[in-house]
Amino acid sequence: MNYRRLVSSGSWLVRNLCTVARNAAGKSKSAAVDAASKRENRLYVRLSRLPKTGGTVSEVLNGFIDEGRRVTKEELTHIVKELRKYHRYQHALDIMDWMGMQNVQYNHKDHAIRIDLIAKAKGIEEAENYFNSLPPIAKTQSTYGSLFSCYCIAFKKDEAQAFFEKMDDLKFVNNDLPLSNLMSMFMKLGQPEKVPELIDEMKRRNIPPSSFNYVVWMQSYASMNDLEGVERVREELARDSPDKITPRTYNNLAAIYVKFGEFEKAEECLKKLEEDKRPRDRQAYHYLISLYAHTSNLAEVKRVWASLKQFFPTVTNMSYLTMIHALIKLKDFKGLKECYEEWESSCSSYDMRLATSTVRGFLSADMLEQAEGVLDDAMKKRRELSSKAMEPFMVYFLNKCQFDSALKHLEAAISVDKTWQPMPGTKIAFFDYFMKEGDVDAAEEFCKLLKSRDCLDANAYLLLLKTYAAAGKQAPDMRQRLEKDAIELSQELQDLLENVCPE
Image: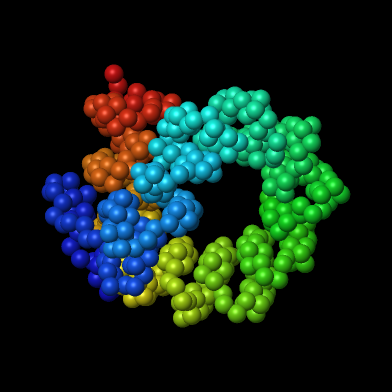
């Protein structure tokens, strides 16, 4: 399969967006699935393919059993764990729902996991309802902790603090986890000054700070531009809890020193990380490669890479991906080409992330021919096109004001993946082009596409309104559209509506 042939074929989307005069004339093609594969016999594989194959979790599980196969709770619990890792929350929740319908007994940990999945798949209110429906015996430290974590992740500060008080009354705040959740929440809310206060609270409760707490504590001072505070935490850690110094500690410190321009101290941390890393810890090598790249030290990046390859007989896809990102950051495109070709010639499992990252790297250097060559090679290996790999080309051509070429790649992505949704950066690139051209008609057609893909959100509407404003045009029905699509109006949206859709 030749990717150039695919994107150069007749494009209904190009015609529709360019002329805004004709309806779509093509239908999306489903990604090819190798039904003869032996891997199809594995339950996890069948469930993981659902976004492409369609169907429901219950259909897959019931079909698996109808084939005379056995399904255990342990296997399903493991699959739920894997799906959570890849942010497949709804499917993971569907598995737990199916288990409930089969009268599988939940333990306290299962309830806690289900609360987390409900919050991520359906929202915090549904998670609260589930928690409140649990019998008293199931309202344990695990389930309380799970809902509390959901509040923190959702930045529900008032609810989190009130729930923390409840947990405290029940004597459930007896380890570092609840306070760690609060620290993470306040950091993400831009309130790093709260973290030292929480550390003091931990000490008051005789809860020893974990290695994670020390890292966040240092990050909080760095966020407040207090390098002396960072140094004080580092000294306390070395003095009182040297056993909690981990590779992540040095990684964090090195990143902080880079931020403050203290490159010698950053290099010192990296050397310490090398001294202390465990011989079989690949992640430590990844830290080193990434951070040496941030200090613009290509020689050290290559030295650590050579050391990793010498120590480990098999170099993983993740190691290659780390190195590819480092070479792109350092703008070593000759090295990037060599690294990609080395991986491609030796990989046992083809990881499209490496090809996509390499494409992005080449396009960032205006090396279009090399980027297209990578995508062609990827198609030969996979025998199908990755929709995500098309997005860097869309952004590239939009930045070059080559709209037709960008749209051809957009249609190619649609044709191979019926579930594909453009990444935020891709959406922004399209709207930036529409704003520059003042083309509200094309922007509206693009929004129709987003709506058909269930990703016409508040941010997309914001960009659409900015396009109208840039073109000096009005949209009389915009308020009704926003209400119909249940879009929450931010202050910025309201301000734009005053011009685009005055009442």
